Amino acid sequence: DVKVTQSSRYLVKRTGEKVFLECVQDMDHENMFWYRQDPGLGLRLIYFSYDVKMKEKGDIPEGYSVSREKKERFSLILESASTNQTSMYLCASSLQFLRGEAFFGQGTRLTVV
Amino acid sequence: AQTVTQSQPEMSVQEAETVTLSCTYDTSENNYYLFWYKQPPSRQMILVIRQEAYKQQNATENRFSVNFQKAAKSFSLKISDSQLGDTAMYFCAFLASGNTGKLIFGQGTTLQVKP
Image 1 (cartoon, chains in turn orange, red):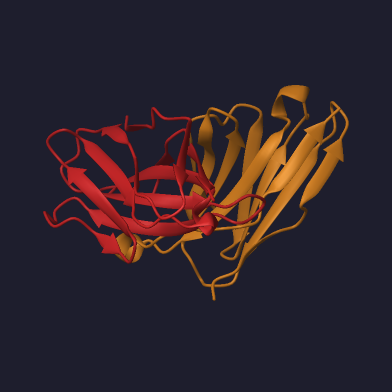
Image 2 (cartoon, rainbow over the protein chains, first blue to last red):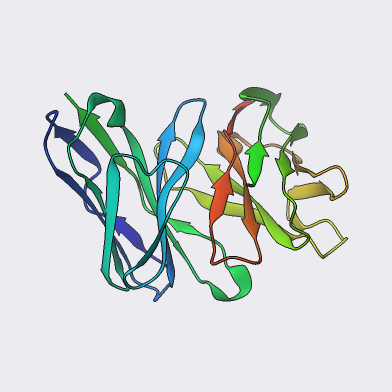
């Protein structure tokens, strides 16, 4: 079974803190994604990566950055957390070839106070 | 840019009945893939069904089937013989074939199956 593991299920951070959300997949997938999920807005793509050290902005990259130093790990960084970044964050991975399905982590519910 | 729209925020259905969830999308691409994902309460998102745009035949997976209308850019999900375990949020998603794998989701539809 494919496993996508997010480092934390729940996280509470203070405004202005630098926040790291970690995601690890164990199936050698080329693609990895970070989404945020908000009621009524669905999943919005923040960043995705199609290879090590390669990244592309999604629809809402402002206030976020990412790092992919190894194929299995994709980190989302909130440089200076703000209350409007309180949300559920979902990581996913997929095979590039044959446009395979995306596999998701369990999500991190981040609260910025 | 591609967009995916789910116009039904919430739906409900009686157990054993059939329900259809709607999805429309906008793209200038000719080749692409469409998906329905299910997110049960407090559980991980999983794939329900997948459709390749170049295939005219509608995809089916047991009780789940799609009605893919390429010209109308419509991709609805039909759930037959609804079960309590089908209660979840359902997301429609689009993947263009020409790029490196950027997956775009709709707003989601919350489905409640009632006993």
